[in-house]
Image (tube, rainbow, N blue to C red; front, top):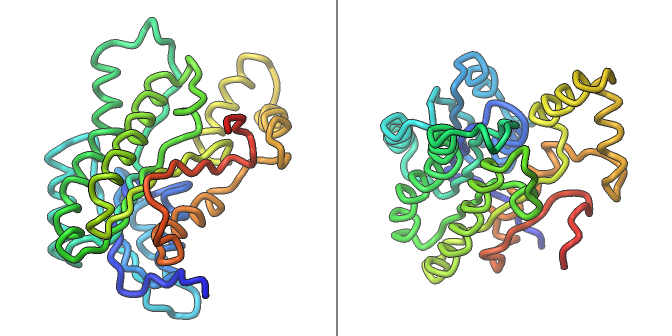
Length: 264
């Protein structure tokens, strides 16, 4: 029997006001988890925190306003979650930014800022959550990376570098803590229709005199399934990895890209 039930599990999802993060929060709650999430915008946090699972299930959602690029703010968020709900059973390191910019004009500070947000937030949260997971001998950590970490391009070079580092970190931790009942995996979304891709399409459209939809449609032609993926489809993969149905899956980098990846 396929067991996706996460009733009474305590989950943290970082950077979850929109897109894949928000979809993951909702689906974890639908499966019965008590989900704590954060984002920088108070309005977005309040909107998602009002979510209740259909049918009145036991899942709950609680939101916190946090800047995950700041170490002290991250610690304060984790302190608050532990005080409110207890230590996490599940950690989804989702927060991240993907600015499009020219490598030659990237300063050291630009690199450092993105490393702090994308990579070090995941390091800090994982380091904080692992001891309790080890003590109870059960835990799930999922790094939300990108297929661009495997197929990087120059326009998103710092983004790809930070996400590739997350995948390597997950792989190393999987080998270290699997015997403690902790499974650590990465999910690599491909062409998923989120605000990030809308912004990228707008840049191309403005430069070429086309519409956003024209650019999006052209991008989708390169995907074997012929379309963009949805945030909900990525969330389904994430929640599967958190469940008992995935109890022997550890250390993988699961690409959710509609078949776009060409590697074996």
